[in-house]
Structure formats: structure tokens, C-alpha cells
Figure (cartoon, rainbow, N blue to C red):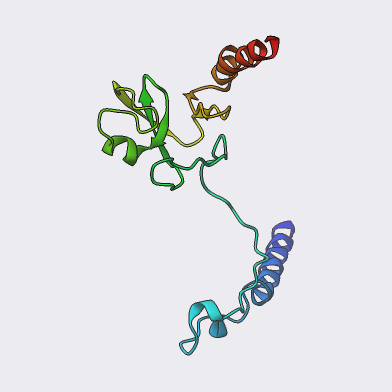
Length: 151
């Protein structure tokens, strides 16, 4: 008896879901119309829950390449000067940094969100952690400002 009531309640719920399909999806016959382009049919209801699939970026700040002026998705980090460009521009550059003209020993490929760039003055050196960047600012920039204020 209990199983029968479960079955009848289950079929009732299925009927309710089927009845509500039109509310969520609209009339599918008018949604895909051969006479109108797909973007001009606005019958679809966007109240369905979205299940976002993907990887969250740790640091959502997007930097622009100084050379090609495009957003950087993969950084080309020049060693030893620690300046960055997009990976393509870094690989195409001669054996000198495009920013400071120092000789390049190596180019590191870094993912977006893993590089911290110094924004003080025109420095633009990069570090792989926020702690290292803060230490750089304290060592290179704060002391320099203090020394200028003393004179």
C-alpha cells in the first residue's frame, strides 16, 4: 500500500514537471524557426538554474602586454630582470628584455593569476607571491621615498 502511494505521488510529480516544461523552455516549435535566425527568436525562458563549470582564477586582475597591447593569458617572465610580457612576445623578443634591454637568461611561462606585478612608478618587476612583492616594495620603494623626504 505504501509503495503504491509512492508510485502515484511519483507519477504526479512527473506530470507537474512535464506541465512546467512549457513555462521553462517556451514552445520549442517557435524557438527553432527556419524563417528567423537563431538570435532573433526570444522564446526561451532564462529562469533555469545555471551550473557553472570551470576553474576560478585566483587573482582576477587582467594585465595588458606592454608590447602588443593584448590581455595576457600566459605570462612570459624574463629572468633575471623579472619583467613580464605575453608569452608570445617574450619568445619572439631577441635575447634582451623589451622593457629594460637587459640580457635574458631564461623565460618562465606563468599562468594567469600567479604573477604579482609592482605598480610603483615605472618598476613593473614581478614576483610569484604577494609576500615577495610587499617585501620588494618595502625594500626598494619605501626606503627610497623616506630618503628623499629627509633631504
